[in-house]
Length: 307
Image 1 (cartoon, helix red, strand yellow):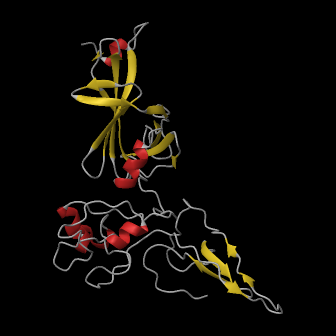
Image 2 (tube, rainbow, N blue to C red):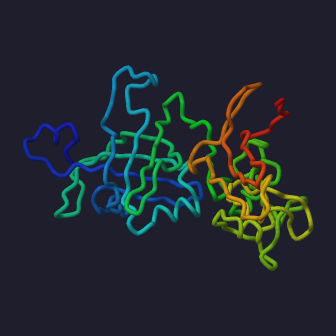
Image 3 (cartoon, rainbow, N blue to C red):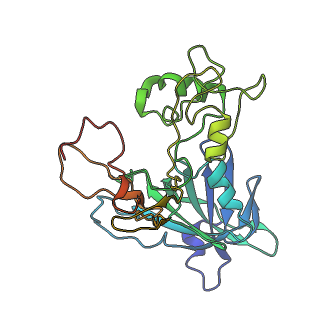
């Protein structure tokens, strides 16, 4: 079999393909490419619409002579990737991109494969009715973590522990403590000292990250054993309209609701030390005389506020 270096010197070559192997955090793997092919026992779906993998810079600011960050646009007309994001999540998936020449007529590879990227996926930048844009950070990149990591959204951003090992880690965080991926959710109903409600006699193994399922699993306020949980991380509260009377008015009227000023998908503030800043308003309501509101100060532990 000729090498890639030999084939690329030819005037007419076979179809060059990029094969993406995406190993998700739950152990499953998504095989993606620009064409539907079978390679080394794996079936690659024709889902890749665009990518910027070949935009390389020598001596880049990130400290590597390669693409520090790659964005892949995936076909999402059937909402397949939306379901993956909802049930499992793309963040933390290990991505391997390989280059290979392929004869699409015979369905056979005509060269060996070359690994051009090993990276870690982050949360999707955009999900529409037809396309999902997935950012992938190079493992050699010196800045691989997106900060702040939490966005303002209706659904809970925490990772639900689906296996017994993950629930054990959710109980005390394991070796990572409170920085564990599953500790923020904390569902561990089948363990001694754990919290959460059972599904009859069995544990829940999945969650769609909504308030309804969080309450069903006993992690919204209290579980079935009346243990305090309060682990829901979404922002979906909307105050109801009430009948009020403004100062100087004889009659009454419904209180106007102030729209959520914090745009969904914006980042939750991440503050270190003491800072003077303007936090996002997550809901507000006017009672006829005063506007009462709630602001999102930040993520993580907060010692207190001064004003």
